[in-house]
Image 1 (cartoon, rainbow, N blue to C red):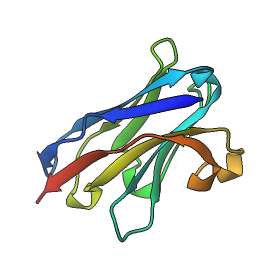
Image 2 (cartoon, one colour):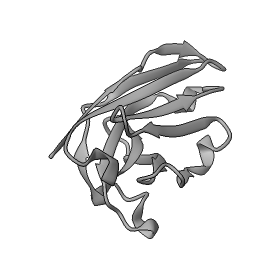
Image 3 (spheres, rainbow, N blue to C red):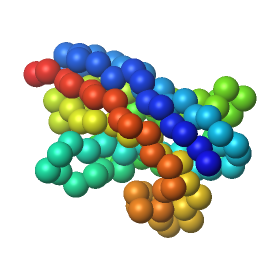
Length: 125
């Protein structure tokens, strides 16, 4: 069992930066792939970024490549999402999720076992 708690969401202006944190508790966190998704009510959930167990492999949706960086510190049970050059289209509730998806399914939210409660990011134009 893994519990996830996100933090770091805020209200920023276009071009600003935020760092989201996902703190995990429970066993074997370091054995899970951790991803960030985003969603608001009425919209489909969207994959944002993923990081594999060791942190050596990362994946991003095209719209955030070059602007967002996912990282993890397994010793602290933490995963981070550094978001730079934010745009109004990044406004969403951001969720972290942990699971063991195969490589081809890393962007599929249905493959993740554990989810946090979400943190709100709002980017003004």
